[in-house]
Length: 419
Image 1 (tube, rainbow, N blue to C red):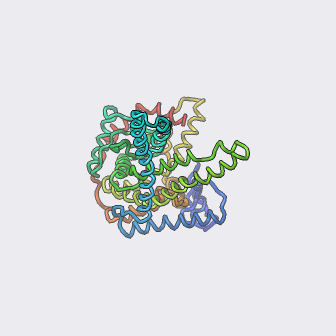
Image 2 (image 1 turned 90 degrees about the horizontal axis):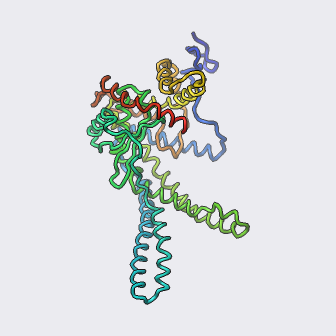
C-alpha cells in the first residue's frame, strides 16, 4: 500500500496503524522535542550550538577519534576548579589554625575572650568547609551482587580487561531506559547502571556494545569525571545556595536591599559554575566519541551503531508503560512483557522513522552528548569499522544474563510507576 508525499511527490509505503512519512524529504517525521518560543537570542544560541556540534564532529572525523588532548578552554576550567578547591582547603586550614590558637590561648589563660571568639568561629568554619567539600559520591545502597548476577559481572570483567579498565564493583539495575557509569569514593570505585528496558531492547551483541561504551568512560580521559572539576562545580553550586537571597526578600525595604546585594554576590559562584560547565562541554562531547570508538573495538562497530540507535526507543518504552498501566484495570499485565511484544511487532520502517527524527533534533551548547546521528556517522567512517568483535556474547550467555535480571522485574516496575 502506498500514497504520494504531498511535499515532494515521492511514493510512500504505508504501514497500517503507524504514522505515514516520507524518507525522501522527511515529511511527516515527528520530532520528540517540545516546541519553544524563539527570539533573536535563542536563534543565535541555536546557531552556535549547531556550529559547535558540527565543528566537533568534523574534527573527530579528521583526526580519526584520537585520545583526548585538553584544549585551552578545558585547561582554563581546571585553573578555575583549582582556585575553588583551594578556597575550600583554606577554610579547613583556617579552622585548624583556630583550633590550635584556641587551645594555646585557653591553656595559658592570657586572653580568654579571644579564645571564646575562636571557639565560636570554629563550628562555622568547619561547617562551611564540610558543606563546600568535593562530592566524592557513595556506593549505591541497592545493587546487584556478584552472587546474584555472576554472568553479567563476568561479561563486564572481560570487557574491562579488554579495555584495561577497573572492574565494575557495583551494577545497579534500573527501571529507566538508559545506562550510565560513574566513579565514587576516595578510591574512585566504578559503578555501572543498566536500565532493564534497554537490556530488553538490545540483542546479545548490543549488550556488549552498551557495556563496553560505559566502561570505556573509565579510560577515555574525560576530565569532567575527575574529582577536581566535578567537586569544584558542586562547591560553586553550594556557594550559590548559601548566598542566594531567597527568604531575605520577604523582609520589607531592608530585606530588598540585602536581597539585591546577596543576589549580586551569589551571581559570582553561579556564573563560575556555568563557565566551568560550558568550558568543558566540548571536551565531554569529544570523550563520548572516544568512548564510542573504544567500545566499538570490543563489540564491533556494527553493533555499536545499532546499540546507539536503540537509545531512540526510550519515548516508545514510556508510551508502552503508560498504555499498560491504563489497561491494567481490566487484566494483569507486565510492562516488560508488553514492551517485548511491542519490539517484536515494530515494523522496520517505523524504527527507521525514529532514526530520521533523531537526526533532525537541535543540538545545544550545553549538551554533554553529541547528536546520535553524528556519533553513528563517526563510527561508520572509522578505519576500524570492519574489525571483528573482540568479545562475542553467545546466545547461552545472553539467556543466563537475562535470567539473572528476571527476578527483579516486579520491583523495578513498581519503582518505575512511583518515579
